[in-house]
Image (cartoon, rainbow, N blue to C red):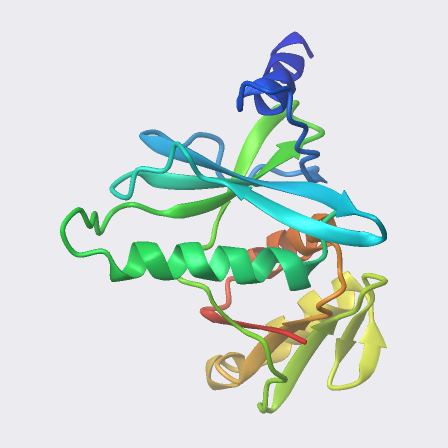
Length: 204
């Protein structure tokens, strides 16, 4: 528990101004350690009734692994555009490009009491509805719909296992743009556990 507390304090104070980033939580660790990394922070801000996403990337080094520390309260409609800009910057880099450098989302493993990381380097985001045979939609309320039919996480796993390999290529994942980033990470961990080679995600 002591180690876990120190990790959270590092996130809260790492920018030098006691800035708070409330990380998402999960009960599994996808990646436990990332070496040679640069931290990027996306803070939750308010201006009157408006919610804002403020990016701090002062420590970014293009040739390193990037760890995105993003406040779980932010909606995807604010988070993903900022992530896309940073992805494009790294992908278009020529002079200092490192083909082995990855991008990770950080979160807290509430069971293992440690920081954990979720790779998303190959994901391309699109702000539109997918036009494919099987659309898995995650709603703002964290409900799951497969082609309009609601179901549980276990039912989604069973559905995926029942499909042939060619059918898996037709699955696309769509997220409500007003979903919280915290819920998105929960769903993203589920998706990665399904072992589907799908590099497109739709926000709408």
